[in-house]
Image (tube, rainbow, N blue to C red):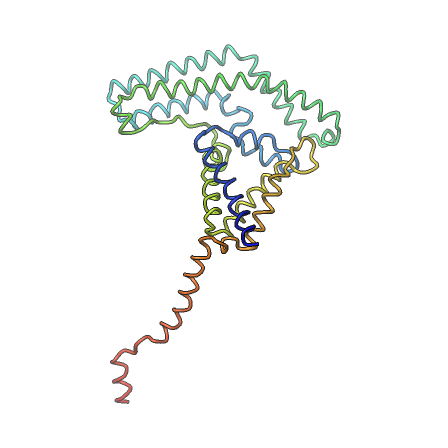
Length: 307
């Protein structure tokens, strides 16, 4: 039985650890698609976690140009540009502002059509009569596909302009400035505290740490509970019985395994929890004994004798 418990703990831990280290090596965005494809009653909550899912921030020309102007100043301060470099940075921002305005002008019809489709989509989602009709759901799916065909090229072009601006501004810095201060990333408009961009950064470390702690059997109970709740959130994103929901069998089974490991305190079996628990129990046993043998101050004894 002990061997089975240890094998389960180490096996689940290896899965988390390998997932985490693979994501750390290949840092590609992955949570945005996961959140965007959520199904069921909690789908709106997950979709709201996707950074700029509809591209409204990137299609806001006024906010974009204001952000770029601020970013240009930040780059100059970050690298401690001299006067010549600062003027070059201002010129880069000015050139990209013209490029952005030209692009918006050339794509005015596509952008207007796309934004109109977003308004119709939001109105349809608030129409309770449509939600129960299968025919309307199929119709909306076709409209979504058409809208995504507009969205993809537009946002890809805009993302490239942002990236080119970042590259050109950082290229103004000398090699010595780059080594001393490091590259200045451009960031993104409309970030939220727990959006998909943050989760792309956080989850690889979460998986790696959870996996390592399960393998060595340290803090197994709280770690297994937290990991199990995480998998529960994954299952909730594909609500069973919802239209279009993906199968969640593997995640559900692993979630149950984690809760079993937590309930059994699996780190006590050939894990560091056994060592830490033993040290803690020894400390608690010696503490009362040490309190009983505390010497009485000599002054108090003399005062008692005089009395």
